[in-house]
Image (cartoon, rainbow, N blue to C red; front, top):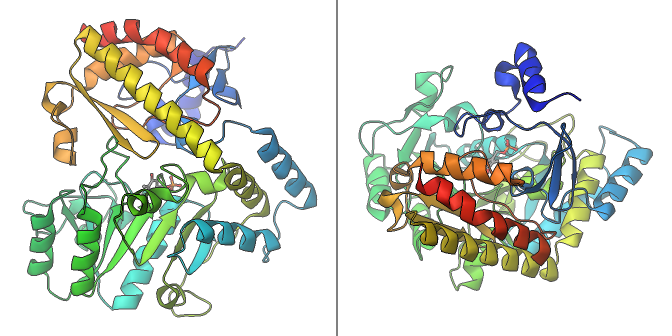
Amino acid sequence: MTTNDELFARAQEVIPGGVDSPVRAFGSVGGTPRFYVEASGPYVTDAEGNRYIDLVASWGPALVGHSHPEVVEAVVAAARRGLSFGAPTPAETELVEEIISRVPIVDRLRLVSTGTEATMTAIRLARGATGRDLLVKFSGHYHGHSDGLLAAAGSGLATFALPGSAGVPEPIAAQTLVVPYNDREALEAVFAAHPGRIAAVITEAAAANMGVVAPDPGFSAFLGDLARREGALVISDEVLTGFRAGRSGYWGVLRDAGEVTTPDLLTFGKVIGGGLPVAAVGGRADVMDLLAPSGPVYQAGTLSGNPVAVAAGLATLRLADDEAYARLDRAASRLAGEVGSALTEAGVPHAIQHAGTLLSVFWGEAVTGGVRNYETAQRQDVKRYGAFFHSMLEQGIALPPSAFEAWFVTAAHDDDVLDQIVEALPAASRAAASA
Ligand SMILES: *Cc1c(COP(=O)(O)O)cnc(C)c1O
């Protein structure tokens, strides 16, 4: 048998940090990442043969459970017909129609392969549509790893951002302005400081990459009204929340709560590929029609709309019916309740936050009043999470390896699976208490 330690050591010789995406390296919780070899329903199995109940779900896509037989069958059938054609296929239109049926404010949608491409294209479209250059983003929101989005807040609210990564040129970061989330005054100030120059505001529909931080009631509608008055577009990034937070994404969660929002552009990813690489950018017809070949804004992709990936996405969305969302909702609510009780019982200060069926736990005294922005999220006590995480892992429950990530249930997390998670909570909570 090859151990996780051996696999990690070998990977580190040839892959930077031993991983193909940074969070997988366990850097913020310590220890050795598990190398998975199999996944099914709510479970993942590592190379040592240990099976875990999974609360990462591939960071969202495994909405109906890992390797759902109908999804796998659709993938195999599509693969038999052809792996890639580099030409349009009927299924692409079906997937786009399925997405539009869930979010009818989308008139047109183009498929790409990653969320990073989707947001990059949305920004180019917004600049093409407005003839303006500046972009406003919120602190702690993640939109993929393109240069202009790896930007850190400058010294004042209305000052240009600084590079958020080595290798990002200052002039590119300086096209971005970073403001605190859920802060109406900061948003007004940034527009006042740069009149007629802001092309778009990009926002996660509900923030879920700094832990889960939903928009305050009315904030998304306020943002839309302000941007419209100022001649800027709103890009709502639903790459994570889309068809995970609810049947119509977080747009639908807001709509069901009576808050009407009409972002000009929306981006999707994760769930719409069902575990294979599919993402999308969509929105108003007049803006989307600026894309090549119908318009002057260039975008392309050799594997965009790949038939095997599209088959996985379509099969997943077809399984994601009201009943599946009811199961997800039940699992997320019960999990949140049980985690909250166990932590309270053990005397661990915390806050649990939701956005539809997404949830996350914030740790420590500084966050017990709730978290509305990145500044507060960063005050959490991450060492408590590290202790909790490792106790859960030893007991066969795989949580996200960072306190700043959302927890993901699947429709396969039934009561028996949740019972097993609940059994592990007291010991993990005591570990967090003594950390
Ligand atoms: C994951 C994510 C992205 C980036 O998607 P990739 O497919 O990893 O490039 C963009 N925006 C949000 C909100 C995400 O959660």
